[in-house]
Amino acid sequence: MDLQLDLPTVLLVYKTALIAGALSIFHVSRHACQPRGMRPMAIAYVLLAAGAELAGQGEHSALPPWFWTHASLLLGTVGYPLFWAGTRTLSGRRRVAWGWLTMVPLGWLLLGLATQFPLNNLLRAGAFHITATVAVAASAWEVWRDRHVEPLPSRAVLAALMLTSAGLFALRLFYIATETVSSTGFAGAFYVQMFCHFGIALMVSEMSSERAEMRLERMAQTDALTGAGNRRWLMSQLPEQLPAGSAVLQLDLDHFKQINDRFGHAAGDRVLVAFAECLRGQLRTTDLWARMGGEEFAVYLPDTTPAAAQAIAQRLCSAAAGIQMEAEGHGVPVTVSIGLACVASPGTAWSTWLSRADEALYEAKRAGRNRVATYTPAG
Image (cartoon, rainbow, N blue to C red; front, side, top):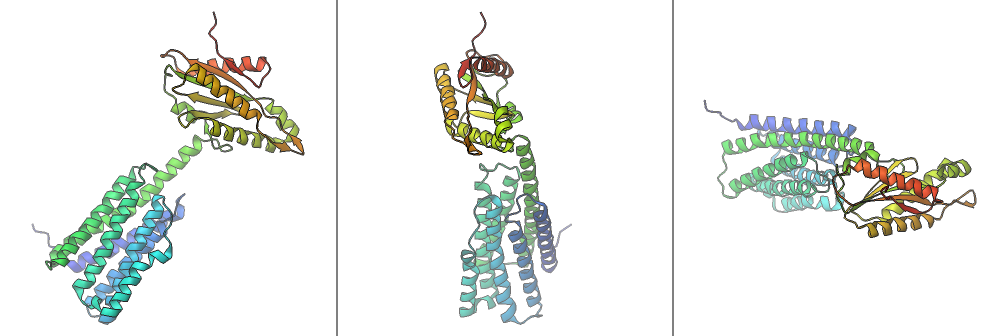
């Protein structure tokens, strides 16, 4: 059985898909944790549907030709640049200045008023398809190039749908340029593009859901006060068995309870934040560290010799002692005791090395605090 695609019917379904997509994106934006860019995309869908409706009414002589030709082209050339700007913001990049955004539709409008080219169906369709092809292809690139910054599974599907949509516009532009336009071909292209636009709306919703899940996961693995990873995060990052040539540090701020009792918990929180910043500034980008709870922190040093690990621990101890802080007009003393365990041979679980670093930490405390102690095997 041959499937006959009726162009007016397909255009009606196409407009319906745009409106449904706009409502879907707008609804998601109201509940999304990062709604930036969604509403411009929803507005773009509405403008495109309105432009298609004007064109449809004009083709049935329900509107003056000078009005619907210029107006439908304006709505289309506003809608797709707005769609690109929304996609760019949604993907994670900076917003586009509105002045730059209006240059494309304003340019087409001025050219149209000066030459009246929109009255010619092929020329008007060509201008619209040029704008749509470039804007949607650029939108696909915005989504794809941020995949390493924010690796969401929905990015690949969203970029593919946008690229497919841009390819359909480019194909129709070829038909227009070569004057091989047929109603059947246009209807088929619109039929596929209808699914692309609706699929884009669904993937925007999926991206929002994935971001919410990542945010919850990040909150579950991040210490809210210092912004450092917590114990759960560190345990998930450490290899099951620590390799030789690495080291573990256990750190404990000295007399932290006395700081809280004398200066208040707000001062204690400031000490924790300052010490976390100290760790960020002193450690390598490859090092892992976390707040384990209270005033306790842990650091994992991969690819380091015992001498280098000792030097890093001593540097952290000195940096902590150099933290300058006042509360109630008095200086707040900040020092840290550090236990160091160097992994000399593989095959031992990380929990064992953390325990050994903890033993060394207690040795540093017994020896007077504000110092580094290294784990030494008994016997």
